[in-house]
Length: 107
Image (tube, rainbow, N blue to C red; front, top):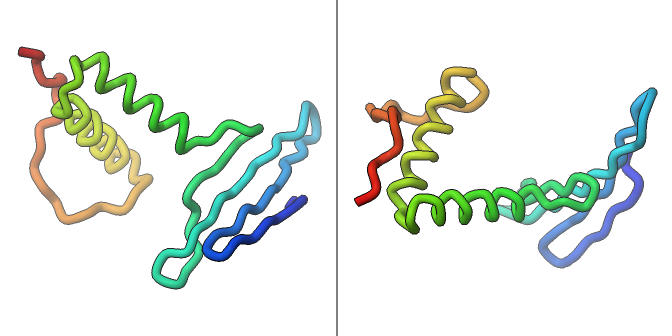
């Protein structure tokens, strides 16, 4: 259920709450921004935790573990894209052959 909303000149924040039959309710904040005249979701915060911030932190940590090399990030993105395609959970862009096997070696 929607519990609140706030608007700005080019964005909207909608606050909703999921109330399960059992257990605590979950508050979700949806941050939408204008893109080509249409509102699109830019971030989702679950119980105050921004998914965009969490993903940025995850990516930064992954790059750091890979010695700061961006090829590790490219490998991760390819692997995640292939996994998404296998699950048919995302739209398929034009096919491009890629080998996502093991991550690249650090030299």
